[in-house]
Length: 103
Image (cartoon, rainbow, N blue to C red; front, side, top):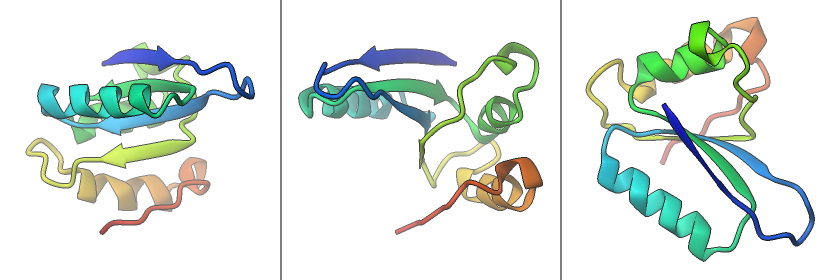
């Protein structure tokens, strides 16, 4: 898990983003896209679905993890595919705030 922060100073609001992505190249592209868009974003990266669920459940090292405003999922991951994480996240009562769309 690693995190990045990009700020634009426009409105003082920072988007909390959880990126679930196992490709370092795609993580870099996503980071560059938010930077290019000049958005205020704090991006945490989980490299697989297991790590993403630990983050959302505030387990162990993620006890102080922020609640994400947006979760971007790689739907083609290998270890606990992201598509399988969403039903777990949205059906459990602590995650009822999550809304998911796939396209």
